[in-house]
Amino acid sequence: MKSGDAVGTEVIIRPVVESDWSAVIEIIREFVSFHAQRDPHFKKVDGHGEMFADYVRENLRTSNAIMLVAEIQDLIVGYCFALIQRKPPVYSEAVYGYIDNLAVLNSYQRRGIGSLLYGHALNWFKTRNVVRIELAAAITNEKSTSFWRKMGFKPFMETLFTKI
Image (tube, rainbow, N blue to C red; front, side):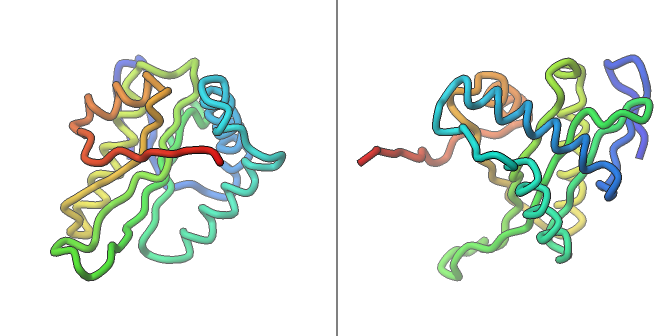
């Protein structure tokens, strides 16, 4: 799937393929570093990028997950990992979409790439009759909270923590 946007060049949004993983892992590392600077809780173990890739690959073996990448001139500049999940049967709408992760290289942000990735994930959810999408956004990440509100998301629950 090809799209034009504010980048000024063609952005291709497509499912991840095996040869994309090294580039995706570099984006993950940049994403984690950005978050860890804002909150030490987001510091990850060595090899976290590869672990995340394995987690995604495992989920992709089902029909309930998709990993999209954004490509510009053969360079992977972003990704979106989305899943269909199920709440306990006490909910009237137990099935929901979940955006596990969306990241764009810092040097390519604010050019519409995240919106394109989300738009393709949204269409994927729609084709599977998903009517609700949830995600978690770190409150210490002003970029992501602003982006997701721009995409129409609003808070519905607050996650609290304490260290013991």
